[in-house]
Image 1 (cartoon, rainbow, N blue to C red):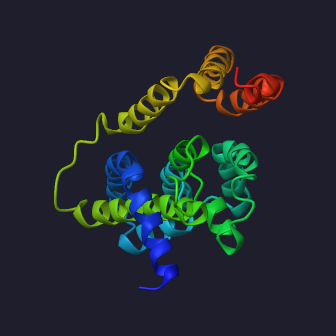
Image 2: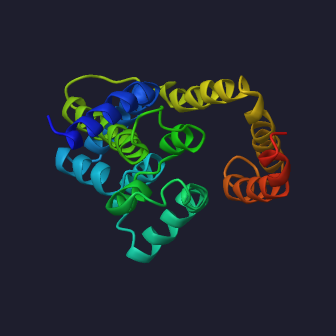
Length: 234
């Protein structure tokens, strides 16, 4: 095994355990997506293309209705922007980490889902592990989990009865775990409180269907105001 293969294998071994919580959530949610897709008369090829080319959980669920209803490209584009606008802020905040990732950067930007962002935004590659390959493998493993789950759901959708009630709690549970882990680090408590507080305020003002983008904007503003204190270790 040459040095390049060794670097990649080391990064893969470091990335895989970090993605196990995401795997647990993605498999169940993607199976649900595959089942719904099959019930809409769209088979495994659709599941593969959408999970490989769109790769946005909430938007993929919405896309089922868009395809069935015959939505125009403009309607689809507007809906995509509304559902995934928060990813603009994810990309901006990760620009420094992804600065030297070379040809990987387009894929890393594409694969920056909520869960991948949560794992990478506050987590550095372990000591001795190439950060570029670590970011890549975290991203690609998470997408593979989603693709596998959506294909399983498509294949099993007509053969087995599925009761999907409650599985949508898998992802919120993941974020609770990540929040608790960050809270245990003293340096991460102020950003965690800023994010939690601003999100709650926006939830009360804008409601559950419209709070995400205002919350992201407000969180960015608050963190910019607190930047000096955070850099000083406060």
